[in-house]
Image (cartoon, rainbow, N blue to C red; front, side):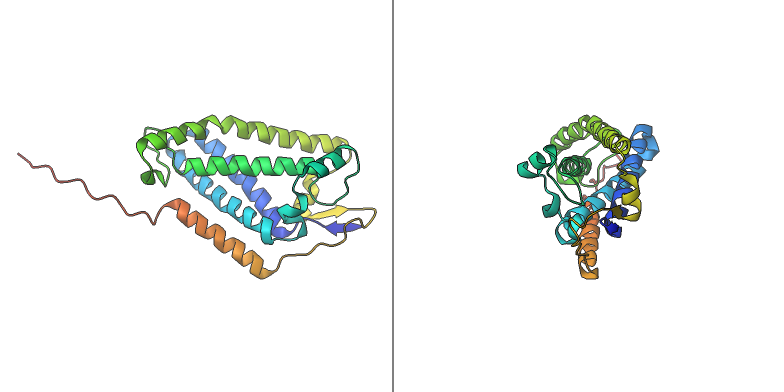
Length: 225
């Protein structure tokens, strides 16, 4: 029988995040005028990650962090072949938290970064030039880790595919095939929870955009003589 595991908001988050991360990586590689789009993709990532963090608290059964947090007991049970569940397995959960943490770090540092030429993150006016330079170094130096995590993610998909387990399909249609009802309860989140998550995500994007920061005072006029 088939059971709905991944709800529509979670599936949309997954694919939109993948699109925005790819867009951010491509545009930063192109540089130049494409940095405008790099910032836009970065702001979209901020909003998506905020939504996921809220959805991990108020979303459906299999979206909540508490349901798949990789505790030592769950990891050991999985290694020993004793773990049972329909959502993320403990090793997959480690990958989820690693990805969310790394992308959150990249998105937040990007807000305060600059390239010493023409690009300045939307919140660089809130910090000193020294702090911005330090954060910019962190932002650039951790980019390789994103490629590594993406590579591990794709390798895991291929590995499970060879073992007869399809990971991409369920993330498209949300359903998993089970032979026994080991975990039949799947409490779906309501419209109120979705509205709260969306409002908080939009609010975070507005804060990250920096439109609320007062413009710096104009430079004093220089006498003509």
